[in-house]
Each structure stands twice: as structure tokens, then as C-alpha cells.
Image 1 (tube, rainbow, N blue to C red):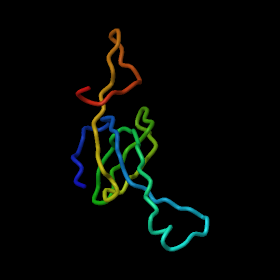
Image 2: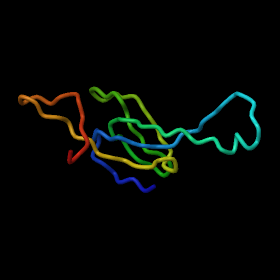
Image 3: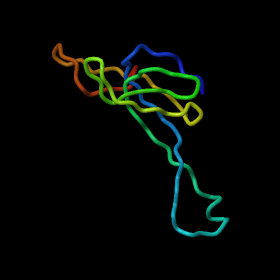
Image 4: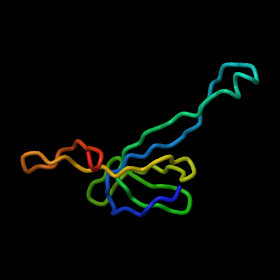
Length: 98
């Protein structure tokens, strides 16, 4: 999936596919019917490179943590917007356009 380059710290909701491991022995038929896990991650856009969308869940004064989601696993990306309440920006987010 091609990801646009967002403004740094833009809040995003990313839906992506992760592996699913089941340590229980099963038949080949059962194993072939296993579905991958669909994940939802929310974070602040940091960058996008040739292979990964890079986000953080916390950022302050030039420091942040790092989440890398492989581009090939991403199903969708939605920009989130902060809720405005009483002149303050809430820590809650909503889907853009909702």
C-alpha cells in the first residue's frame, strides 16, 4: 500500500495484518484455514520509508518511542483529528469527517 507523507505528529489510525501463531498441534486442513490477525494501531506520524510506516505513541520535546509497521501489511490509514472542547484540545480523537 502506498502511504502519503503526513505532517509530523499527525494522529493516525492504521489497520494492518499481523501473524497468527497457534502452538497447538492440528491437522494440515485446520492449519490452512487459520486467519491472520487484524490489528488497529493509533499513533503520531513520524515518517514513511521504503518498507515501513513509522509512528510513535508518545512524543515530547524532541523524544519519542517508535512503532514500525511494514507497508505490505497495511490495509488502511485514517487521519484522526483532536476533539476541541471549551477552547482546549482533548486527548480524545475522532475519525476525520465524523
